[in-house]
Length: 324
Image 1 (cartoon, one colour):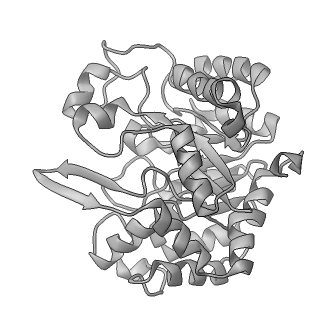
Image 2: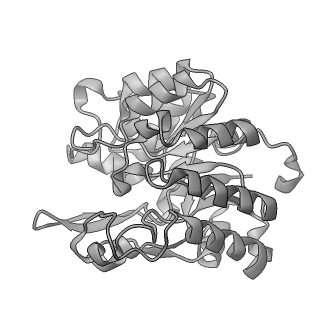
């Protein structure tokens, strides 16, 4: 069995209105494409922007909290929409899904907690996802106004899956900050997405902390980022040493170095990214097949470990029959 631990379902108005790609993914399309490639379970969550932001500012690529929002509570609409799609609209495909809810650690957090308790009474979900870079909401808010999410995670025994960055320009999702929060909260489990951008210091720290994991979502384009010496990956002085011209080799080496802390995920549909940035078009293009091929090239033992066992350990599934 292969579990893909990182997938977005739904639509992102920010990406669509600003002209960026990707901006949507349908649950059934993801299921059918992945199933044909050998994937059998998916951890899924909504896209990133939410209706409690100023939607009118999205065409300019801006994040504002002023008038123009379509909802008062971040992700209240998006989380309900996802769970209804999984459990009611498409239950046949939905039975293969392990949904996570999205949360914003900075905006109207008490109201988000109220909505999440309502959702928990109606639907089952398996974790809490945060992508704070796009929201421009510092992950360190988990120490103050976002602490309610740590409390819910502990109460419900749910893990976090958090977008991580090491780029100096990213003020909101630094891997080191996430690791600091994780170290301060040993009762809660955390996964740092995107291989900590191959920052060896952060990966070693993930390996050392008992409550942290990492995933390699959008792996192939991150390897391409190294080859092209792009700023969203760790600089060479801090980078995990491997052959980034070969994404399969990178997976094998990461799996050997961090045998119990590495989880495989595609980041569908964000295994490809295209946008105009500062007047230049940036295109980093991969495919679901390329992500799966890089995984399976590592061999059956590695696949079972990083695409099943480590993920099951991280989720702490109380009823593993859902995987049968």
